[in-house]
Length: 451
Ligand code: GDP
Ligand code: IMO
Ligand code: MG
Image (cartoon, rainbow, N blue to C red; front, side, top):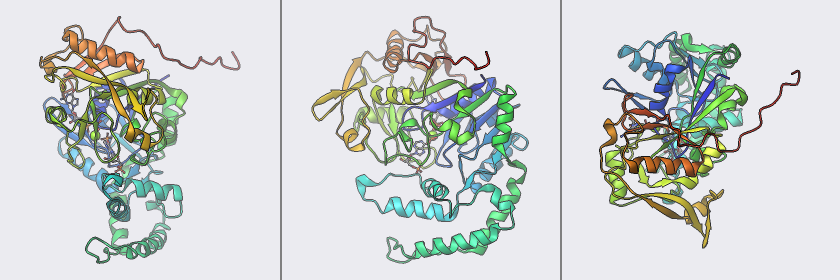
C-alpha cells in the first residue's frame, strides 16, 4: 500500500516541513489536505532557507507532483505569492502543482471576521488565531450558503453569487463596532470581483479535480506522501477545543481532506519536537515561563513563521503526545530539534497529570480540566554536547539516546528519525534493534472476501 502520512503530534511547528522535504525523495506525489495559510513551514536545504505555507514542502524536489486538495482553505493571493517566490528562486512550479477546484476560497471578509471575532474575546478567552481567515472560511464552507470554491471562479454565476454574499457580509460588518467606535470599512463587490478574476487567470493552469487524480494515482500504485498541517492537539474535534484550528489536523483528517480512503495509508509518522511549543492561547501544562523556556525559545528560534509571535515553550508532554499518537494511528516517531534542549542540565518529561488531586495519564477532554492539570515529571540526565554535527544514532551521547528511548517507550512507538538541526543533512535515520517493533495495538489485517 503506497501512502505515507506525516502528522504533528503537538500544537504545530514540529518541523513537519523539514521532514516532508526529506521524505519526498521516496514519493511521487505530496498532498496537502487541510488547513490554509495559517501554516508556516521552514525548510533549509544546502544552506538555502524556504518558507512555505500552502504549497507542500515537496515542491523543492524535482519529479514530484504537489497537490492542494479540496480540504484546504485556499487564500489565492497567498498561493500566488508562493508560486512567484518559488519560480523567482528557480524552483519550477507549473506542471508540478495541482490545486483542487473544490478548495474553498478565503475572501477579504474572512480575514476581517477572523480579526474582529478573535479580537473581541478578552485575555484568556482569545484563541490567538493567525488572522488568516481560516476559521470563518471553514465556517462558511460548513454553512454552505455563503461559500465559494475555486472552481466557481470559472463559472458565469460567480459574479451574481459574489454580489449576493457581499451584500450579506456588509450587513454583518456594518453591525460591528471597531475599537475606535467607527464602522469597519464595507466591502466593494466590483473590486473583489476584478481581483478574484485576476487570481482565476493566474491559477488556471493549476486547477484540477484532484480527488479523481489522486484516486487514479493511488490505485495505480503511486507512492503518495500526505503532509498534515498544524498539530493533532489543534484538531477541531479532538484537540484542546476551543483553542484549536478549524480543521482535522490529527490523522483523522487525511481521508476527509484528500478523498483518499484511510486504508491506503500504510505508514503514519508522528512528528514531535524534543520539547513542547504552542503559539496562541489555550492551556499548555508543561509551559516554562522562566529561563528554561527562554533557553528553548532562543536556541530553537521559536518565533512563528507566519506571525513572528514568540512561541510558548516547555517540557515534553508525553501524556498529550501519547494521546495524539494513538488518535492518529502513528506507527513510528520522528523526534525533531533534539539539539535544542542540550545544555539545560537535567531534562524533564511529563508522564502524568494531577487533576483535582487525582493522578491520571488520560488527556482531558475538557479544556477546563486541562487548565487545572499539574504535570507529574520524570527527570532524566541531560547532555551538554552540541548535537548539530552528529549523524548517527549510535554516536549520540548516552543521555540523548536515553531521552529518545524514554519518549519512544512512553508513546509506545519506535523512534525512527531524529533531527539535530534545520538542514536536510542534520537528520539521523535510526536503524535500531533495541526498540520493540510495533508494540501498540493494530487492527487485524482483513482477508479479502473472494480470497
Ligand atoms: P512546521 O510548521 O511543522 O513545518 O515547523 P516550522 O517550520 O514552523 O518550525 C520548525 C522550525 O525548526 C523551523 O524554523 C525549522 O527550520 C527548524 N528546525 C527543523 N528541524 C530542526 C532541528 O532539528 N533543530 C533545530 N534547531 N531547528 C530545526
Ligand atoms: P503549522 O502547519 C502552530 C494556531 C494559532 C492559534 C490556533 C487557531 O506551521 O504547524 P487559526 O489561524 O488556525 O484559526 O488559529 O491555531 N495555529 C498554529 N500553531 N503552527 C501552525 O501551523 C498553526 N496553525 C494554526 O496560533 O492558536
Ligand atoms: Mg509552522
